[in-house]
Amino acid sequence: MNEKKSAAREPEELPRLFLEFANAGDADGLASLYEENAVLAAGDVVATGRSAIREFYANLLQRRSEFPAPRLLAPLRAGELALTSAVSGELAVSAEIARQQPDGSWLWVVDQLKISVGSR
Image (cartoon, rainbow, N blue to C red):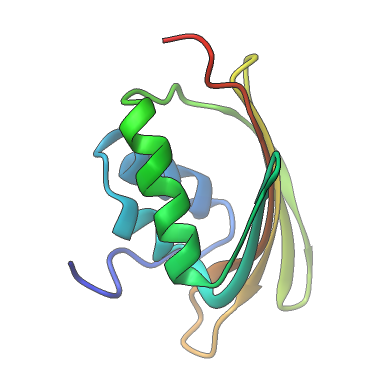
């Protein structure tokens, strides 16, 4: 798949792109939202690096095919860093740190995710 899928021009675009890729079943697209050495923590899983993050999402997408639109909280920005967060009912709560890239796009660097996959 294309290494650079869609670029987030603002940090608040990252959750929209996440939802688009997740509902398309696109693990490569989801991984493209992270810096190469990013860290994702979800429950007992800690995925370090884009490849491990892609593997995490590929496994998640095998168990879940539909992701509802989350309630997004306004990003908090401090220069080239931003804190993004979202709540999806009882399904998931997330908080992420994004960093502005040299080309002006934004990618997540750290992602703390709590998922409940039991329903569906």
